[in-house]
Image 1 (cartoon, helix red, strand yellow):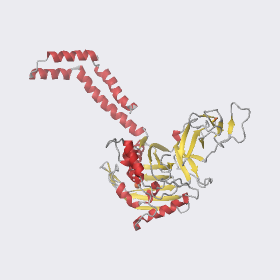
Image 2 (cartoon, helix red, strand yellow; image 1 turned 90 degrees about the vertical axis):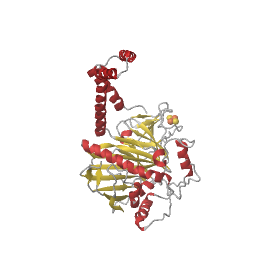
Image 3 (spheres, rainbow, N blue to C red; image 1 turned 45 degrees about the vertical axis):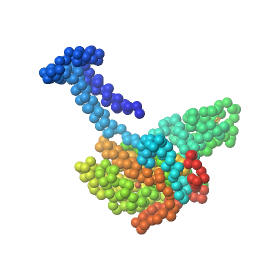
Image 4 (cartoon, protein in one colour; image 1 turned 30 degrees about the vertical axis):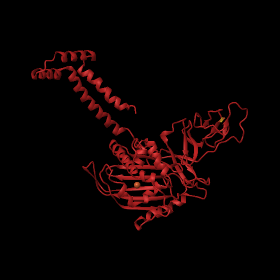
Amino acid sequence: MPPSKSTLLSVILPVFFAGMIARPPAFDEYALRLADRVQSANITAEVVSEKVEQVVHSSGFRFFCVYAAVAMVTFLVVKLYKAFTEPLAIYCNESKIAYFVDGPSDGKTAQERVGDFKRARRFGQLPPVYPNGWMSILRSDELKKAAHKFVHVAGKNLVAFRGESGKAYIVDAYCAHLGANLAVGGSVQGECIECPFHGWQYRGSDGKCVKIGYAEKVPEFAKIPTYHSCEVNQRIYFWHHAEGKEPDWEVPAIEGIDDGTLQYIGFTVCELDSHNEDTPENGADVAHLDYLHGPRSFTGHVSFSDVSWEPHPTEKHVAVLRMTSNPSKLLGIITVPRETFQIDQVGPCFAHFNANSPLLGKLVLIIAVTPVGPMRQRIVTTGFTQKGLLSFYIGKRALAEQYYQIEGDLPVWANKKYLRNAMLVKEDHLIAKHRRFFTQFYSENSPKYDPYKESTEW
Ligand code: FES
Ligand SMILES: [Fe+2]
């Protein structure tokens, strides 16, 4: 990986400053003098101490000391600047985190070893693979004005594009003319996407072809499918329904995100082979918290009490998880008081985490689990805090912490078998409740996946 700008800056800036302060000799001149000293050296204790004296008082040594000091200060300044201003960006290393495979071994590459795990997997009797509901497909900042992106979600190939007005659209990726993929080489023209092959232009709002540069007339029927989309909380969502039903609920806007009252603190991304329901089911699985989670926390071991999970009393597509963390120590010194978190599971594919504590202030995390393939999820978390440098820094740490908590789950989700008749004890009753809650997101035509008939290559 090439060095980052800040690393280069930490190396180059000190040379510049040390050069200005210590005025180093030209390199070749220095090399000649050094060779001369070595040649004429008569090695006795006096000569050694005299040489040491000379070195210590030489401009080269002074240059080195100044360089080291300035390098250290620059490094710290750059690190601090980044810590308080640069949003977090973490991408999961799937082989290492989900399969504990870190490099080649036993004559096999890491990829081959992971392939062995994937081939050997038993899936069990899976529920349908694409639930009905809103799915987050992109972060808003991933789709610039007049740009487009290929999106593979819920078994569909789509193109998301942002018109010159700033509005985002989602349309089918394939041109109605000869089937070219609009996302590969296409371009945005006003509020339309233009095919790279023969330049047909499709309107984002209804998919109608509005221009064929070389034809006299645009046929009435020239059209591509469009999909319901919305842009809320700095995310772009796509509506999936197996029966093609219209959306019957909205993605709730979180106060302070779209109006900029809260500050954006970054994102984390994981992709793994798992069923879409595995991640939300985790919220209702209280017993696993003490086994997979906690010890990796930057506040030391965190345990939870008063954990509850229940469907929302009026919004039937929402379930609410509440948990209270017991007091812990930040960096082993500062006592973090008891805090209560609320996580709203909104529909099948995303959850809103809310915390409001004396230490963090307001913290919101949006955790989206998007089925990009039948047994492939993309989990993207974005974070926001109240404004302020300290909240920014602590919020980033909390977002990273949430990512480490997910890391704890990944190896389980990526290798488990789905047991329809799971052997639950009394204390696991919320898992059964969650499974019942989740059935509302499946309908008659929800796609099933039989891994024994189909290839996992999709
Ligand atoms: S294939 Fe798209 S314009 Fe011809
Ligand atoms: Fe978990």
